[in-house]
Image 1 (tube, rainbow, N blue to C red):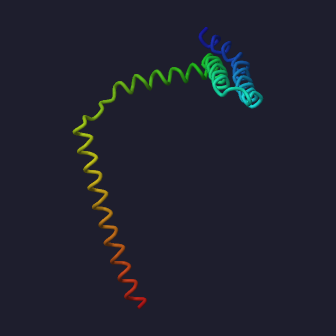
Image 2: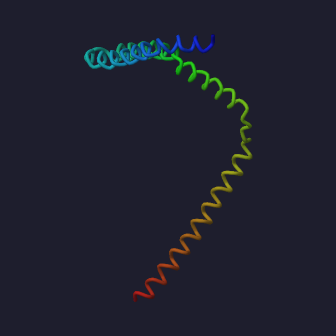
Image 3: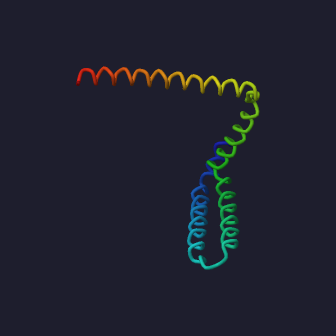
Amino acid sequence: MNAKVEVDESRFDGLKWFSVVALVVVAVAGNHYFSAESLLYRVLALLVLASVAGFIALQTLKGKKFSALLKDAKSEIRKVVWPTRQELTQTTMIVIVFVLVVALILWGLDSLISWLVSGLIG
């Protein structure tokens, strides 16, 4: 029965996506048509249309999967052990020192090769 529910939901998904695209087209065309109106009113109208389009998009099968993905990502972010300020500072200093050492080595190699080539060429 669960498979039938997904088939029923996906049958109207095309219509829902068409509605989302139609709302976006209306928003763009309306913003262009009412370009002489106040920016505040146009922004508010765009926000309302975007909210309605987003709500409709979340009602589709892909929208529900996307919503579940966001919820899972939020729960995974909570599980991350973030470094302390001291650990972050120490790691940053190690990276800076390493980059400077590699830069000096590359500068030295470049100078040596340049000196050798200029000696050969004359």
